[in-house]
Amino acid sequence: MTLSALLVGYLLDLWLGDPPHWPHPVRWMGGAITGIQRVIRRGCHSQRALYFGGGVLWVVVVGGTWLSISVLMDILSFNSFLTWLAQAWLTYTLLATRSLRDAAMAVYYALRSDSLEASRQQLSYIVGRDTQNLSRPQIMRAVVETVAENTVDGVIAPLFWLFIGGVPLAMAYKAVNTLDSMVGYRTPQYQAIGCVSARMDDLANCLPARLGWVVLALAAGVLGLDGRNAWRIGWRDRYQHKSPNCAWSEATVAGALGIRLGGPNTYFNQRVEKPWIGEARRDIVLDDITASIRLMYVASALTLVVMCLFTGSVVGIV
Image (cartoon, rainbow, N blue to C red; front, side):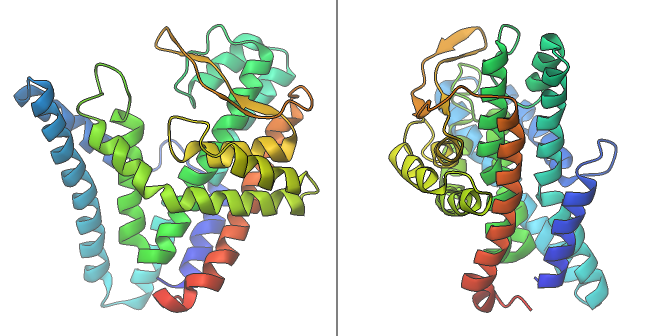
């Protein structure tokens, strides 16, 4: 993996985002997951069988992704420019900084226009909770939480695994994350078949989530926000979530902004009690959405710097 290809892919993501009609590996992964899941459900009729089938689903999708990308890179290895081009393009598809920014700003603009229904509709595209009855503050809180959480899933973790194992390992991580987003739910429909995917996603994000705490707190200081409180709340509330990883970034962003995130929400018409994260030094405001986006951008740049300093010589980035 060359540093120049990584930087070009990173900059392409900031510039282009994710045009909906362009080919994208994650959409291919999604199609594969849907098809394989259908076959597994057809043959697995008990909970035990579905647990086993979920493991097979994970191995086939993640292993198949890693193997296919490894083979592709081997095939292209005869030409250094083609190898570089593939690395740059795949890096671009791995990152979600611009697309996350665009999705959050779509809600922001709807709220700024005082269109509550439009903001709820835009929010429904990026969160799993029910949005039809959310108030304006609840919508803003949901957007900030989504940006904070996905700063790890969509930016920091892909960069981390790129530095550790190059494009094949980073694409395998993306498969892990896509599986979790599609089947890793604690609902009757997915609890069995999605169990392995959910647990493996927790494992894959363990180190990136902790790195996210560091770079988001540093980003708060760079942006003139409350960096000290970001460190403190990020550490204090790091386990205030059912996921062992999500609260690290959410708590850090909450501390940087001086607001409270988390709390109860409704999923599939069922109220889910969740702990609060952070301290409500003030009420959440619309500009907290743009502040969370700035934190994401600076944190992504700091991740590049940190990983270059600490792992560049190890993995041979030149």
